[in-house]
Length: 307
Image (tube, rainbow, N blue to C red):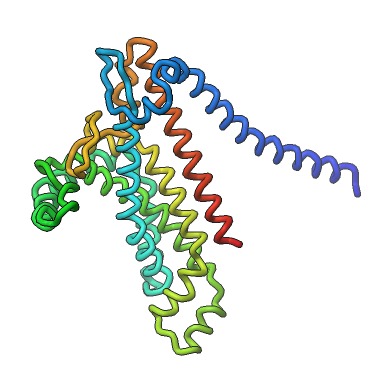
C-alpha cells in the first residue's frame, strides 16, 4: 500500500475516533457540571424528598420537583398519545395510498412543520388554539366524560385553554414531523417482493399494510417515536406559552401546571440565592437523567425487537 494512502487512512480513522470520543466527553462533562451545581440542593433536600415533594417556595427556601416532573411526563405522554396514530397514518397515506403527483406536496408540508421555530408554535397555541380549546373542545369533553366514573377526574375544573391538555396538543403537532418522516422512510424500505407476495396470496391493501409493512417497519417507527419523545421532554417555549407555571399537581388535564424546562426558563433569571439556583440545576440534572434513561430503555427494547 502506498504510504500516502496509508497515512490518509490512519488519519481518517483517528479523526473518526476523535469525533466519537468528543460526543462521549461532552455527555460526561454535562453530567459532571449539572451534578456539581446541583449538589447543594441534593445535600439539602435529598433525592426521594425532592422528587416526591411538590412544594416550590422560594420565599421559604423550600423546593421540590414533583410538580415539574409530573408536568413533563404528562405533557410528553399526551403528545405521544395524539401524535403516534396521526403520524403513522400520515406515513401510510404518503407511501401507500397517495397519488404520485401529490406525494411531494404532502412530504414538503411535513418537513415545513419540522422547520417552524418552537416559539411560533407557542404563540399560535396561545392566541389561536387556547381559545378554541376553551370555548369549544374542553366544554365538549366535559359533557362527554364528566358523567363517567373515575374518568371524570381527568376533566374537572373550569376550561381555560391554558392547561396540560392544550400543551399536549401543541407538543403533538411539533413532534408529528419527526415520527412521520422516519416512519415514511422506513415504510419505503420494505422490499417490494414482500408486498407483491401478499397481494399474490389474495391480501387486500389494508391486510398488506397491517400484516407486512407495519411488522417489518416496527423498529424504524419505534426509533422515530424515541426521537420525538426526546424532543417533547425538553421542549420549552411552545409549552411555556400554553401551560402556565403552577407548581401543584393536578389530576385534571384542564389545570395549569409546569414542566422542568418551563420552570428553568421562567425562574432562572429570578433565582437570587445559591439554594434556589442549585434547585433549578437539580431539575435540569433530573431532566438529563430522565432523557438518558428513556433512551436507554428504548434502545434495550429496540435490540430485543431486532433479534
